[in-house]
Length: 221
Image 1: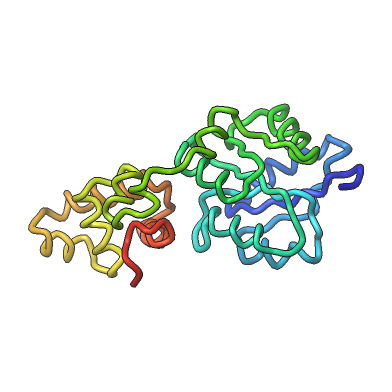
Image 2: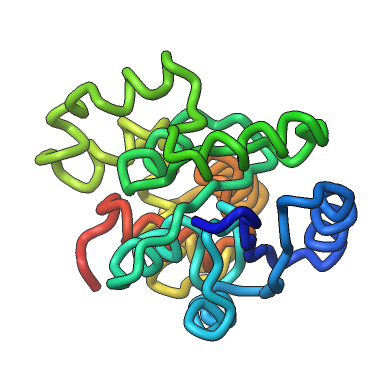
């Protein structure tokens, strides 16, 4: 890497991108080379902008941060990736580490924390809490690696009833239709859907279903 660290921001929230750019603009060795509102635009910008490091939101509509991380790491030219997350959710931070993220930041991190993380990653270090790193390096439970979709869902905190609901959400059913099929009230279905979205840190029910497929919580469609 050169004396200046070239940083690309990928986040669907324009205010978040502007905030990071303003935060880092006073640091003379960090150069914000661009921003993208989704993974597709970010991937397209990589060749032209040639960043050294990507700050990548873990939760975005469409292609989520984890899937975007996979695409970035699959490219022939190596780029360091730091995940940015609203919540310190161990499951998704751990998954990001396993997929090759060099660090992670909370969205409410201080300027000093952001700069320190970028400095460490630019130097080739992992900006990851040692406890989380050790957990990421520990083999995952068999229920996640080889279990059934329901067992994998349970390992991520999704209850059997929520898994029933999630399966029908993925099939495109409405809350009313799901309630009729499972013989539960529509309000109960709504609460289950909200719980699933929260547990998977998804933006909406559609992204929850997409993430569930990618995490093998549902059988292939």
